[in-house]
Every structure is written in structure tokens, then in C-alpha cells.
Image 1 (tube, helix red, strand yellow):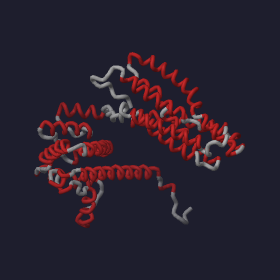
Image 2 (cartoon, one colour):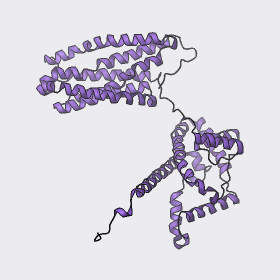
Image 3 (cartoon, rainbow, N blue to C red):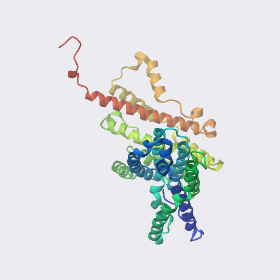
Image 4 (cartoon, rainbow, N blue to C red):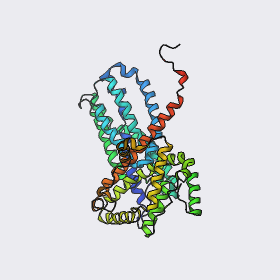
Length: 413
């Protein structure tokens, strides 16, 4: 969730603006943490001695929540960005404060307060990480020191700022719940400040995982022999996209004989899980690009047409090889002669391979007008296969644990 690098021509001291904005957000979120202070004072008046007696237990629970929040905040900062963690955490904290102000029962108050603790801590645990990203590398150590001084100063000053609202509520000058509502408003203000920081901390791009050993071996084989049989979906996708951009024929591997694949059937099936998951991961980005404007759509239409032109023809040899492979797989898997119930087998085939492309062809006018519908169908189709594959694997695993000797027929000793 790192910060965007400084743009060319941007003033050298622009980082000071971002640090000031960050400290504004931090000052506000350190101000809006008065829930425990309220429970120690006005809470005892509202809820009685139970609030005072259970304070140590609540403190322990809050500490345990802190242990959970720290890794969660760090994890999601890498997914949505440092600033968005602050936006979500402080906005939710603000809303939770308003809910807390309406609690009439101590137990409801305590439960909401613990939820509030999680939200209000989310941004705070990332404070040093945020400063490291904002400060120039040459002055980073100095600014980390300033950040520590700021934290000490704000710890002393922030509670004093809204203390008059607590005092006024206890003296009857303000309606019940005013102090908590003020805390909520301050947290929402912090959320707004973090929202402005999103411009500096956009959502991180997904980091591509490094190649596995299997992928490296498959790429070496492809480079040396041209055999793309065991390239992963992401490797093959990059190769095919480059072919489409260059206007060169797509990479192809002969379908081959079933007998040649028998030893690799498990490997082929297991690789499909990761391959389909990767192909599904491309769909959201593809849809996003499609909606970026007409220029992007025309570029994507050209790619679809090139793909269809090179990939829609089925040579006689390929038809024969695929058909024979399919029949030999059915025989290998123990299926009977399909002519005994032809429509059943045809239905299974049609269900396994449903129509996915609008117009029945990638380059059809209907699909080129809006291919998103076809992409969504493909995504759902791949997701269904992954789900079915998991169910089958789980069922096989469960069956392995059963032993017929563990069961006896009724009436037999």
C-alpha cells in the first residue's frame, strides 16, 4: 500500500502537505477515542457499579482485540492501501460511536465498545508505516522522530479538546450521549482526511506471484522444443496476447493421443484449478478496461477479432484427435457405450460445455457490441468447474477413510 512517487515537476516540499494532512487525520482519530473515559465517569452514573466492577475485564478484552487488529490492518493495507484502512476504520468508528450513544444496557454498551475498539485502532497501527512512505528517504529517520513526538503531544492534548463535552454532559448542560456523538463526529472528520490521502495512497496493484518450479521447467521445455503442453495459463496467456499484438499466429500444441496422456492425467487435472483461478482473475480487469471508453473498446474488439480469426477454425485432424481422445477418456473412466442412452450423454456434454459467447461466435456482431455478458458467463462456468472439482476431491478423500470392516449388517454379530 505504498505512496505514489512524486510526479515530475512537483514541488520538492509537497510531501509536507501530505504529512500535515496525515497528522490532521491522526489528531482527529486520537481525539475521538473517549469511549473508555466515558465508561469510567458518566458510564458509572448511567449503568451503575457493574460498569466500575467490570472495567478490568473490558481492558483485557480491548488488549486482546489489539492483538487481532494489528495483523489484520497490515494485511488489508497491502490490499486496499494505507489510506483506505484509515477511511474504513475511522468512518466505521464514527458510526459505531453514534450507536454507542444510544445503548441503554451495559452489556449492549460493552459489546459495541469492543467493536468500536477494533475500528478505532485500524489506522493507528499503521502510523509509522504511513510516515515512512510520506517522508523523503534522505530525511526519513528525522520524520520518524517527529512522528514519535507528535504521538506524545497528541496523547496529551487530544483528550482535553472534547473534555468540556463530557463535563457538560455530567453537569446536565448537554443531553445524554452528546460526548459520544462528538467523538463520532471527530472520527468521521478523520475519515474524510484519510479519504483525501487516498490520492497519495491508491489501491495497490496486485503483485504477480513468482514462477513456480513447474512453470520454470515448462518454460524451458517450451523455449527449447516449442512444446507448450505444460505451460501454465498465465504463461500461455502472456504469450498469446503478444502474438495478437504482433499479428502473428497463436502458439499451438498438437492435441495428441490419450494413451500418451495417461501418465499425466492427474497433473493435467490438478493444474486446471490454478489455471482456471488465474483466468477468472483476468475478468474484472477486462470488464474495467471495457468501460474506460470507446478507444479501449475498439482496441479490445480488434484483439477479439484477431483471436476469433486465428482460433475458430477446427482442422480435420484436430476434430478427429479431440473426438477420439474424448471417447478413450470415457472408456478409461468406466463409462458405458453412450448409444444405450444417447440423449443422457448429449445432455451431460451440453451441460459441461454450455454456449458462452453471445451470437455463438467470438467475432459475432452481438459479442463485439458487448462482450461483457460472455465474459461473465465464462467466469461463472469456470467457477462452477472449480467448485465441482473441489466437491469430487473431497468426496474421494472421505471415501478413503471408510473401511467396510467397520460396518456390520443389522442382525449380524
